[in-house]
Image (tube, rainbow, N blue to C red; front, side, top):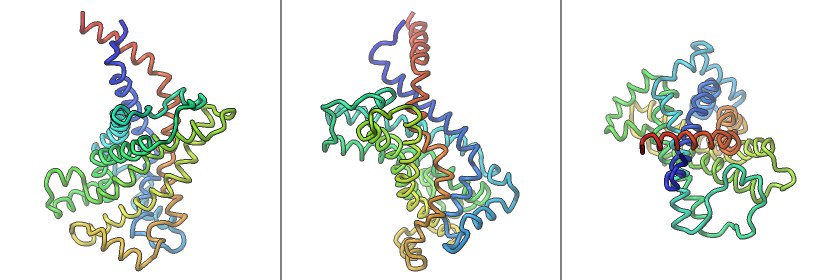
Length: 320
């Protein structure tokens, strides 16, 4: 029995969201040492002098090569899954809602990216508004489920719990975690890169004769490395500095103006962007975020018909 029309879109959204979550857990755990190095490199623990990556590697592995994995607790596994499944779910939901309210087309997906763009498609004001609002919403909600776990991986589970007690925040504040604003801004940038910039640019600007699954993979990776991460690294660096500020102050609340001002006076723009900081971020982020458009548009569609068929059987058994 086929699914009723009104259930097809919710089932598609759920399938794609769960698929993104499972993919994220596998990739993020395997690349945990790279994440730890990137976190430390983009904080005040590492000076802006020579061999920044070497400094970060020595700090990350001072308790052994497996030390980064010991910072991964149940909250991190849950957050990794929710971070990407929720990001995908929220983006798809907001994209659908704004497309209806603003009268625009949904963001291209799957085989649509391999087709020539429709002559009527354009980058109007409504499309631009949706392209801004959808990733901001998705990035903010993503941070609600991921930021606290990221601070745990940065500090370690014991130190993180101690600092949370010192802050004395409400349950909502503890759930969101320190440096939430910087984390949300970074996630909004990466959501824009994966779900807006990559598909739209590939559909409209990539030569039609060169479109293929492999070219989408490399195009998405390139946009992530040379565009998304160039912007996101500034927010990643700010996030690390906020956590250092909170820790050094014995659990004091963050003052973003003071943190940015002090960092700029001491190191100038190097406090927020240097080639080693960017490279560390790329090492951490590219394996998951850079391959996300390829996985989302090339791999997930392969299992979608079977998932919808299974959902149809489940619906039939419940209805009978």
